[in-house]
Length: 96
Image (cartoon, rainbow, N blue to C red):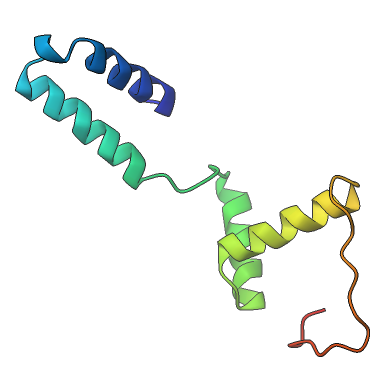
């Protein structure tokens, strides 16, 4: 069951709503709700997820924050985003 297949099933059901049984509609809606509830972002290999969790714990930040930092820095390093400038006079919270 992929997101694409659930979306196609929902579209198909919308086109033939009068012909669907209540039970079939309930199953379809429950599947869609389950998919929405379990959306957690990008699926990661277990080793990658463990490494991210380890680094996030070490930095005392959440995994989503760490992924955002890594992605932003990769995009900056590879010239997909402009590099941020840091004001030398500003205070930091221990992370530069």
